[in-house]
Length: 424
Image (tube, rainbow, N blue to C red; front, side, top):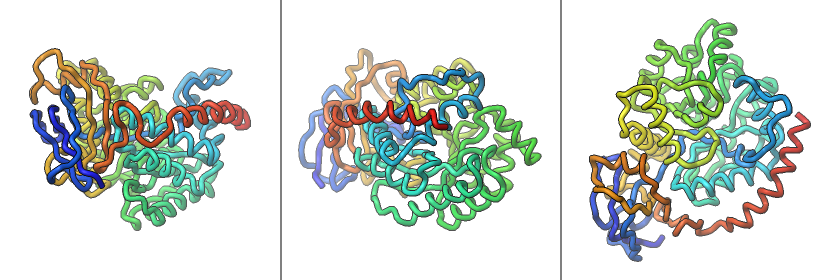
């Protein structure tokens, strides 16, 4: 593995809260050592790579897709008329292409780790290999899982559990990890819930599940089980230290307390929540472990952080510009927990060399006290991206993927995928 010395730039360690002009030496995939090839990053900020804490790469080929003839009027209808038809239309080719193009575009946006949540009910077995290869092919880190659900019957619910277990046990990719995925409480019966929790705990991996994204989630849970969503998950052992819940928009105060004391991470997805009209999550009350996800919109975490700030500010004057930066840091902490590191965004000696070089000619003084304001209100351009000491993006171009060829394949495959949706 080659060594590098980044010189002339400002090193911005969001985890440690330090901002200083200094050279950054990288050797054997980690920060430190003597360095080697000199890379001029003058006029640039060097930050830890960004982490998308909740992605749906399978949605990448949906961009520009015609809407359903009968337009959805609520969140459940969005699921039924759009996403649950798209995921059923996926086949191995489109699963792979979705992962490749989604990972590529995430890398170009400065994201170095994707925590993905996959669904393809007509093509379950082996699907996680397609997702993993797409992420790994882009040179990125990834944590993948299959969405367990009973909405197509308990047999397919068990098949989802089996796909997660198969991948976790067989995976030997150094930059890819597996976890146990689950759709949401309202589509998982007790039998399947218990099965997936048991398998996850036996394998020693966390769960990744949607929670209270829409008010109907809570209504359904109360009607079926006599418990609100988070309390049902807690009762069945599906809300434990290191688990990851997405959204949490409609958690009540008692559920918020359960989440805070459980030790789970929360993926906050402000742009998706706005797009789906489900409301604003009580992120300020959910504790420190709130990271940012995009829920499949894209892999641009700086764009998500800006939306996070604006929604938080709209909700409360107490929200400061540092709030979304703290959420980006928690994504790095989440990724670190998956890969056995304190946080994937540290730029101190011994940390993994996952970093992003932002071309940004600051028009005003830049220091540790105002870095958040520059990142949220400025327009930094992602120039270079490194993962584990290896450059995957240089001067805005991916180093290994033929971008135009891949985009051409996607443009050919997407209309066929959209056409197959008519079958469902």
